[in-house]
Structure formats: structure tokens, C-alpha cells
Length: 230
Image (cartoon, rainbow, N blue to C red):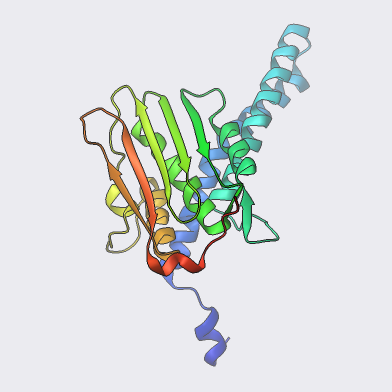
């Protein structure tokens, strides 16, 4: 490929590295339940004891649900979402998030007024939601608040020994040299998403070990990204 076409389509090393980091993140999330499915199938193939086979079937069913939930969430958080229109129903996002958190130590609470969000804002919300779990490493509750219009989105994480998660500077969009490591890829993506839709993220914890608030607000340039339906 030569000339103008090459200039338009050739990816930079940083872009390729970032794409690889995102792929690694998704693979890391699904490798455990998929591996458990494989183990369960091996037990079914080799084991004749009915009780062991029953345990294997339970393991396969549980792991398949976990893998499906992780992939559905990743589709909203990292993918193009597959939506034909510009909006994604909050009910669909809520279902995907609750599937991801099901059986875990962190519970979700939703206070949402609009029925849908612009897909770019939904992608940002899903990433901040997953990132916010780092604020409650011992479990707790994350409340998701989405107001009408352009009032912004808020998440409040509360739990034992709550703290501001690592790499908050990247989530707020601060520049760094080169690419982040694998642990920082999500906050780095959050910073990029904020810039792309003229949003900003503030992370605050007024009281040590108290609730951590993640506030997403929009600048005046974001007025053309409405995408919220009441």
C-alpha cells in the first residue's frame, strides 16, 4: 500500500499496542470460565460416577453463564455494541452489568431516568462502572445514577475500606509517555472516551474509607451528543 491510501489506513505502533491490550483484557476476563467449561467436559468424557458427572454439568452451566455475561458486558464496554441506532437501552446495559456482577461481593443499585443513552456515553458508563469496582476491593455497593438531559452520570462506590482506584490520573485523561500496562488499560480507555465525547471524570473521596464518587459531566461541546430519551 502506497501514497495517500497508506497514510489513511496504516496504524501506528501505539494504536496497535492499545488494540492488543484491549484484546488481552477481554481474553483475561473470559479465560477462567471457558477453562472451567473445558474441565467440566473432560470430566463428563472420562468419569462414570453419576454424582461426579452431575457436579460437572453444574460447573459447565455456571461457567457458561459467567462467560456469556462477561462477553455481553465487554461488547458494550469495548466493542461497537452492534446497535443499529445511536442509542442503547439502559435496560439492556443494566441486564449485562447485573449478569457480570451476579454472585460477586459487589451489588449494583440503579437510579436512572432516561430510557436510553447515546452509545458513546453508554460505553463510557460501562467502563467507569467496571473501573469503580476497584474502589471496593472487599465488596460493597455501587450506585449508578443517570439524570435526564445533559446533567451527567454518577457512580457511588461504598464498602469496607473503600478507596480511590489505581490510575485515577489516566481515567481523568492525563497524558502519559507511551502506552499503559495491562492493569491500566481500562482507566486509559476511560480518559480517551471522555475526550472523544467532550466529557470529564472527577473521582472524589471526602472521607477516608468513605464512599468514592465518580462524576461524569459534559462540556458545552457535547451538546450535539444528545442521545438520551426520557
